[in-house]
Length: 237
Image (cartoon, rainbow, N blue to C red; front, side, top):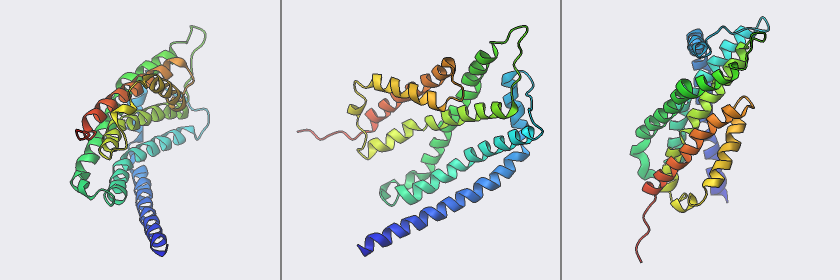
């Protein structure tokens, strides 16, 4: 009993140190990102094709600060992932020690793919749909703060969703996820992706929910293929 308590305390201490490192790094990166926040905002506004408006004196600053926090979160993720790998995964599966660098690189690449898909495909389509309801007499005035929240939420959600195949790979290697799990469950996956897209999509319209659900469902089938290849083959007989 004493050894178990000591082990738990040691694990908590390791987790506390890792969280402290990530918190300090996050704050430092937030300050750094603030210096580039206007440039990033301009890149997002190009998707909108018009100027944003501020409904209060402080909204412009809040919008840039929010953008800095989104950027700091994204930049902190590789470090957090590496610490998670070293302190949680490796002690349990030492044979995976040489995979640390490649795993972080692949995870970063997958996240970037999700963000790029969102920036170049989903965000322009979603914003164009919402703005398209304007008439000659009704013109939308888009809040800077809400626009940043819309873009940041969608891009980060897509980036994290693209980690699903990598997660499925390691779960399959551990024997926790098998191809049989995916068989005849595409209807459940469709329902789950629809519900998840409704949760993470900032707006309640069906169009943007569908835009988000389509790549989520595609990731489900990609994860199935990954598990099919990575799952250990059962011995004959």
